[in-house]
Length: 399
Image 1 (cartoon, rainbow, N blue to C red):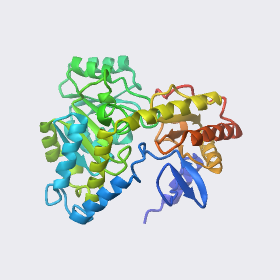
Image 2 (cartoon, rainbow, N blue to C red; image 1 turned 135 degrees about the horizontal axis):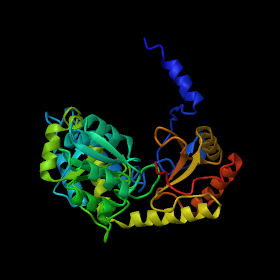
Image 3 (cartoon, rainbow, N blue to C red; image 1 turned 45 degrees about the horizontal axis):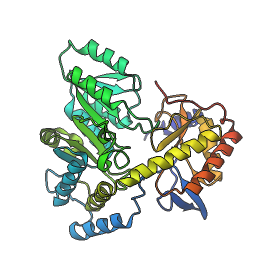
């Protein structure tokens, strides 16, 4: 019997880091909790597709034809024609030669990093990269160099210092950072990768469906396009379902099939997820305007918040953080927002660096302009109540 659980829980509570689950009766940007209408700012369903009737019908059709599960790992009997069809859809969307679907975005990052890097190799990771990228690098046992957030001079200095040592070099970054909502300098990353003969891996999880041609992410924004060696994406955010994928060359796909343990030893993604994802890709690639509409909505909301004297980072994406600082302060802020009909979860370490606890406002297409205007007023009132309105952060974290 594990005797230290209560002791560890008490330690987490003392530091303001204890977490609990809250069961919600439904998904969506507008939900009802205990009879009260709530605007949900904690969802990543950016395009509002999770409840889209077209996705539901596609999921039901897939279940009717294939059943509820893939029933095995894909290298055994779990590789369905639906997997191949979705991967073809994704490679066209991302403008790559191939794609490979994993069980989740987290599993994708674990598999990609631990397969493409190994002992003796060198991985250069933005300091604010997602936990799944960090864990994938750790599993690879490669040398890890964490450069200061978006600091290209620091990255180049690290690349220079390592260039006389043997081993592959890999640069890894998110495109839209999940907790700050800012965008990586992709052109500069691509140039450094070329200059120092490094592989470039970009995680587009929070950009797929929102940015770029056919919703292909920041790497596909006209006039700013780059072609990384590997692009990582997810089916669980703007595409409204579940699963992860990598867009890459045919040879990298084959290598991952043979080396990525999170692919080899996992049951294939179930038919419902595959069917809904195919429908989502069709919608995103044929109706690209919603991403622009969402970003315009987010820009207006950002302006409303700044007009209410909330100190915000510069606008860059549909993710708008309000940095509070202390763990207990951010939870009081979150609770005050909840009382005002806003579901805005406090985000604390280790998800964000110590001293940068925040609320993360995630906008979705289902939010009307009038609802956002009311929300901005409510957020300003809550900030004033808990005493953070005048001393929030003016920019993103740079640790």
